Image 1 (cartoon, one colour):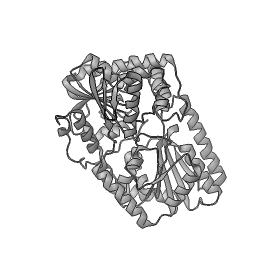
Image 2 (spheres, rainbow, N blue to C red):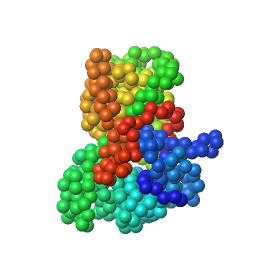
Image 3 (cartoon, helix red, strand yellow):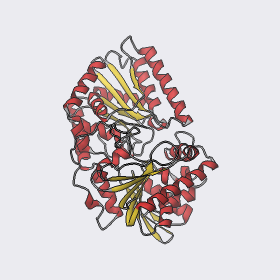
Image 4 (cartoon, one colour):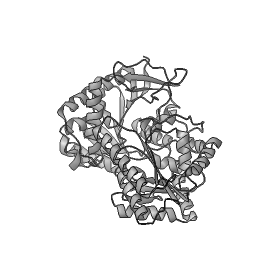
Length: 484
């Protein structure tokens, strides 16, 4: 394989699970996912992406996607269980999300995680040109930066943590805490969504490694590792163009009709994950119905829950609980032809999602903990009409930027109910003022601004950032299915 001057290393390749009719690969978009975030960037600059293609067994041979070369990494069934379902998503994911779900510590998973991380590092070392920049993504691959540095000290290595990074008292529970911390600090630049995460890492570096550390710099093993907050964003131009398409506008109008033309539509779009606060949201809505503050004939809730990590036991249990609760609410409060909640556990095309955004009077984004939450940003970008209300959890990274949203503590069910009622009854002028301010912020802080800020910090020569245009192109958005 040819070598590249820019290499992205991530758990998954950005591929649709199903090949196009002509056999070509299509870009994979997932709700709030990495592929969505990097789509606009890698359309603009040649690169190689190292990642797992899905499935088990030998890595497939894959064609390029435009200027993006693909380097698949193989996983066996046992490795998928230990590395991905096990250590990454049953140990690190719950711990990094404030232990919303109790993390599981399994010694066998750690060995598999380390072995798979080494395979990713070796693949990146193989495809990177001398002096290339390698951008490693997220908690799945936290050991890769140091492994890659050992293999290729000539490389410029960046690491970005898309999820929250926990406070020291939670991180200290990890049996392999020092190795994970050293792995991440093998990078030249470690980026986070929020400044607090960089502060947490600095405290841990002092405590566990005896390093000299500040919130933006850690000196470890004689090297200086820079850290900082780089809030990830979306391709604002793409979402605006998609939302203005005549077919999407017609679809939004039809959705309103299909929902029975209610006075108010509440919408939530999440991966089916226990961090997203879906159960708290259903409890609040159920109590609003019970108390008579919301009438089924006037108000309908649409809950999109995209399937996620279906082989992990805790996710299977969550799906069962949510479907049971939706059934209970519809059985108690719904009418023939008028369910209280429309529950959709399926992937959605982006055009369908854009239509849903425009159908919603209130977008309800209430995770218990979230690194950023790009769905909230997509909703704001989609509302060309300046209407709609955004109810947003204080514990989503997006809350620090979208300050004009109706912010709420999702753990406080009474507070969540009051906030929903406030958003549903807000004056149009108030909603327009809030939405206008949020939209103006997003225009100046889109996905290319994020990439430019990070890559400039990584490469002070400016060569990497020069590859990016000033703004995202308003290219027609492909109707690509959303997959887990």
